[in-house]
Length: 241
Ligand code: CAA
Image (cartoon, rainbow, N blue to C red; front, side, top):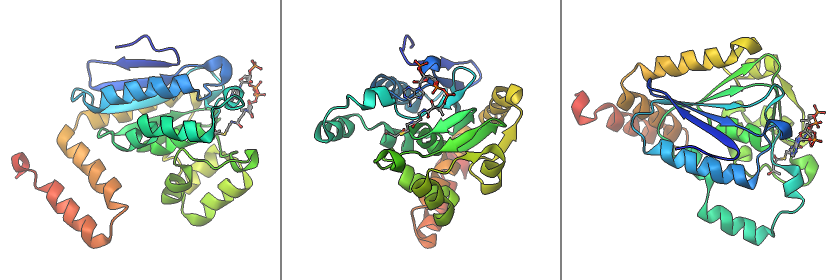
């Protein structure tokens, strides 16, 4: 598999896949082409049992992703057409359905839909130059790639509204302090750190890893009682008893 215009997809023999957003001249801005490429890549990852962890990263020095492609955005189809395309090719829902752990290796600008991609990942590791922001409201739109839902589940209400309603940018230290990222590392160690984490996960029983992810993520949207039932179901898969 390969030959994507906007994404590099690599899979090694150790169970690690790497997805690189690859439009460095446009700070890896998220375009329609990138959406289609990611859709194909994620569908392949979802059914590939050899893959035990996935790393998302951005090409170039300056950004993981500077958000939606604003040049393309100005020529966007009507809202109706956009909604129809989204219902056929819902990349964001697909992100939620990937069973393997997703690790975001974040550097430089992580803005708008770039931040929303990072929020779909299970672990976020960033380098010290990272800058997070959701400029959408200031641009007259909502962060509608899931940001209004994923961010509060991670940061809580107040900190999320502060970012969403004011467009305030968050640096690496703030991101670490608030839990937006769980590890902050020097830039020259970012990819190595992400790979170490991916390899650690890949060394564990893949079914247990998937079930742990599912229990935590699905459980977040359940009552405690339902969540505990889910945990019991997933803890007692037949070959683990
Ligand atoms: N879309 C398209 N091109 C972009 C881009 C974007 N989002 N962000 C940067 N680029 C391009 C620039 O046009 C520039 O290209 P040229 O060299 O051809 O002019 C190149 O990337 C480098 O960018 P800058 O020269 O602007 O770099 P900088 O270091 O001076 O500034 C920045 C960096 C602060 C991130 C600035 O580029 C910026 O503000 N970018 C836009 C951020 C933004 O608002 N993103 C959209 C968020 S909204 C969203 O994502 C949701 C949605 O669905 C619409």
